[in-house]
Length: 159
Image (tube, rainbow, N blue to C red; front, side, top):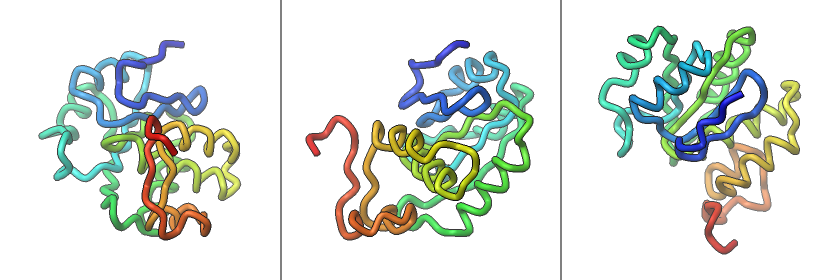
């Protein structure tokens, strides 16, 4: 199975789910070539680096586009429920989930795994930690009281 490591923070969670930071239009075509039929975007369109018309590009490639804009400084339970519904409602599809950096996405999948989704919580934590360690509002979002009040820390930094 091909891996698209040229895409920012590319990760494969299992045989049907991949994640990343913001793919380019060309990288969306690469994702489609893997057989992916659904793209979920948690990054708001107003973020720096977001594509001008991602929905149009995805649709033009014959994939379904699911947009759940999560403001980085204010993730909500409603955002999580929309994400959970998108993942659960499309269990028989190959799906790629992204945001701008794969921080939102990795935290959402960690919380999803903690909710007994069938994904390994340990694997989801390891995946998230390879990208970042959530602090601030994100620590509360993933139920990590020890990190509340701490800054978000990103992999590659000395933490």
